[in-house]
Amino acid sequence: MPIGIFDSGYGGLTILKEIAERMPRYDYLYLGDNARAPYGSRSFDIVYDFTLQAVKALFDRGCHLVILACNTASAKALRSIQQNDLPVIDPARRVLGVIRPTVEILPEVSKTKHIGLLATPGTVASHSYAMELDKMDPGMSIVEHACPMWVPIIENREADSPGADYFVKKYIDEIMSVDPEIDTLVLGCTHYPLLLDKIRLYAPPGVRIFAQGRRVADSLYDYMARHPEIDDKCSKNGNIEFLTTESPQKFDSLASLFLGKKVKSSRIVLT
Ligand code: DGL
Image (cartoon, rainbow, N blue to C red; front, side, top):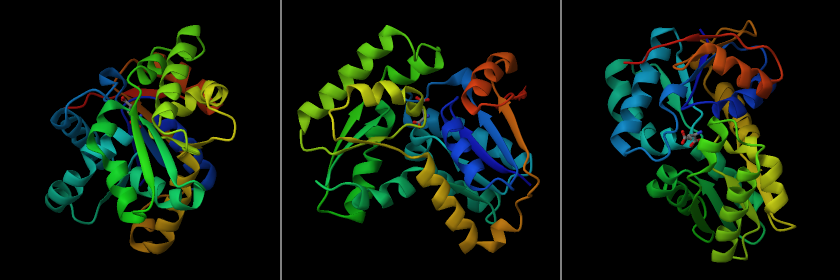
């Protein structure tokens, strides 16, 4: 049974790429809700409803473990799904997010203890990063800054355009002016690595850009070692399959570009 990987659109591919490199023997089933992306400015209830539909669809296709490779869904839907839905649907299945594993490593990453978070308006409004970081190390500070234009730019394939430069510089200048002591900018949205070159270009020298894919992959690897009961349920033939709620042709061209290999997705309707 494959490991389910869910995102609102293309962003979760940045997580899938790292996970599949770290754990190549496993099978994966990726689901991008491209037809309804972006999720970032949607209300709590809508993100929860859409995410639950996706998790159920992945469960129906045999996944015992689903990773919400989406910060917005992790921030707004993960806890409710874990606490309220899983016990009813099937207490033996698991849904994990990307925020906790990312925050866990931050005390080791930052020297100044000043973190900047770049994320969707939904993730920022949830304050999930600030709350998790406070539990981990109350001595650290975090500025959470919303970047509402970045996901639409990426989903509309404008990541290489001059318009993208404008919005990348704008949000980085804004967050750095709030706290110039920030030494680590966390990309708290799985889409943002698609803008990595421009983010590096406009970040002040010496400021580290932290993309979460590798960290999430390491954390999942450890999780599997600690949870053989889940690991045993995951098939290991090295296959990756893709589902999208948009047109498969549209999904395949950008996904293939991003993953560096041919992708052939199928359309799924979520209800
Ligand atoms: N990639 C997602 C995230 O990590 C969601 C972006 C969006 O749909 O707005 O937050």
